[in-house]
Every structure is written in structure tokens, then in C-alpha cells.
Length: 269
Figure 1 (cartoon, rainbow, N blue to C red):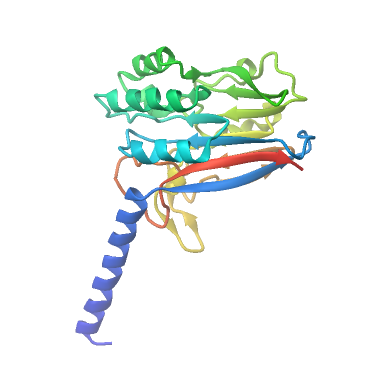
Figure 2: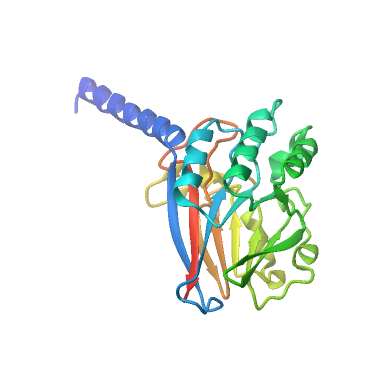
């Protein structure tokens, strides 16, 4: 191959890479999944969960609200990093929370490391509480659908060392299907203390950059080739789901890793 042809091939590859980056960042998708459990006895019953993670102030409110409106989830969960550590004005995220509550009053939130790192992070979380978002850092509550009770537990950010699993599971009946919200999937390293059937997390951004046959290249707190970066992982009676999220951090780049909202349906085995 002569130099002109090589230069042409390189330019085409660069164009394809830049096109994919622009597409993956700016055109999010809805990732739909089903999780089955023998704790759900009624085959006609399902719990539909819409998960938002790692928004980082991402300005796609119309897409988010349309997704909620179109899919009619039973509950909405936000698994941290709604704002970025550099966010100075969080009004857009407050407006988003206001609109979410109008569409569905059952919105649950746990903090991520960027809420912890932001100087206004605690203030922001308190504003969410005033907007009737259910902040469940190191606590639990429940949701009832068709007389079936689902435990919803949450921990403050594991990555920042603010998590308390004992408080998160305090007083729950683990015969009920139990969902744990944890920003960081690394909480799975404490599997012996986790009473959850399903853990919903984010933090890793799917690696932001993914490579064919290799997967995630790098992730926050895990370095190169992270163990838990995107999708489902199975541990005895616990399922871990890592959402690759909507936004970006540090660099506004995603490659072979489209931004997304997750829609997870829990059904009978």
C-alpha cells in the first residue's frame, strides 16, 4: 500500500471514530432487559424500573422525559452522579427532578461520588428531598404493586467510603424481592453482607471507550480493563446490573458505548 492510500485509510478510520463518538454521546438509547425471580409467584405481575445513572448534568431532558412518558415505569431510580463535580449551577437537574415527579411520584435516588466531590453536592441532594425525590442513602423503603411488596434499599457512595450496608438493610423482610441502589458496582465485593436480589449501579460509564473483543478500556477507580463495567453479572442469588449511563466525565467522549437509559422488568421465573 502506497503512502496516499495509507493516508486515505487513516482519514476514513478517523472519520468513522469521530462519527461514532458524536453519535454515542448525543443520541442515547433505551436499553431494555428482563430479570426473572422465583420470589415473584404471580406470572401476570411484573415490576418495571426505569434507571437513570451518571447524568452529569447532561442536557437531554426531553429524551429522558419522553422515555418515562412512553414506557410508564412503576418506579424510577437514579443511581448517582446526577451532577458533575464541576457543576456550578444545578438548576437544570432540579427542573428535571420536578418534571420526573410530575410523571411518576415514585422516584428514588442515591448519591454518587460527584455529589460527594461537588462543593454544592449536599445542598443539591437536600433540594432533591424538597422536590419529593426519595433519597435513600444508607436507608430503605418499599414499593407495593398489586399487594406485592418490593424492598428498595440504597447506600451512599461506596467509592467515597460513605456506604453503610447495615443501615441500608436494617429491618427489611428478605423474603420480599429486594433491590439495592448503589452508585458503584464495587459494592459487590462485600457480597457476603448483601441481602439484595438485584443491585442497580452505574459509575463506570461502560468504560466510556470500549474496544471490540476486549470491552471497557478504563473506568473510574478500577483502572484499565475494569471487571464490572456494563451489563449483567451473576453471583449466587444476587444479580448485579451496571448501567453505562447518560453522560460523560473528564472528557466528552464515548466510543462503541452509546449513552443510555435502562428499562428493567422484574418477572416471575
